[in-house]
Length: 379
Image (spheres, rainbow, N blue to C red):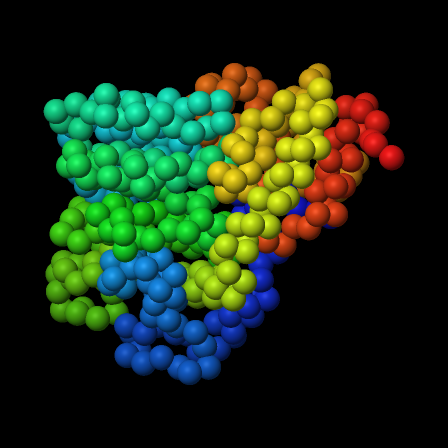
């Protein structure tokens, strides 16, 4: 079996992640706030928080708030900012985890979409032109889950700060495969999914909250300490982590980061680029295949394509049933970029890469695509 659906959830998980989760659930529960101690035999939430702090160059670990993933993180930020009668900028490359909350906010706020080119790169120059007197927020993904395009978030961030706009960066596809220095961009909100390129398990994630910005609470409850208070404590991260944490998920994130650090994020990036280049070089020669992806050197590891006379669902099914290759078909929860690409009706087949994919697997995929389309392989 060849697994090429890592933009959804990475698989396999590194041994260090699987072992840390196993140890977590098989040993005494690590509820630090409630016990007031950490047991040496198992990794802890504070350990994982410090791994996130170290990896992303975050000054204060209290600004890191763990949650169930990017969807919860985006909702907590957008609704927590309690915005009304303002203007919000976003892009056509966004996932529904961004789009659907924005549509809920559109009754009281104006939403403007920034266009992208045929590779999925947004038109950064148009941001300045779209800013209004009441533009308060820009929310945007660092890397597209459809084309893989890595946006120039440095320019986007500086443009926002210059115009007193709050940047919110969805790093679901970028975290773990793109170098992200949050210390340099610490006035932005950052959103991460743990189960993708950070190699954590499903139902895990976190956000970074900038200093001096308080969010309206979307949930309240137990914290394990300061139980005499009728309201949530002001102290971070307790204020935004009500209820029992997903401790195995949080620890899986820390262990995934440890795995990435051991390999080197640049080595992961280089390997993905190598595999992407093979896909571009080989499948671009197939006249029945149309590619919708950013160049390998500006791509987070995603290769999307269509084939003449096949819907994306049919092609993905054939790849699985006849060749045991797992891909992803359809709109990938990102309908607006498919409208831009003209693929809204049939969607695209998406191949998404991980450190664990090898050249031989990519060669088998290319062979399968060529066989399906009736193109003969070179000897």
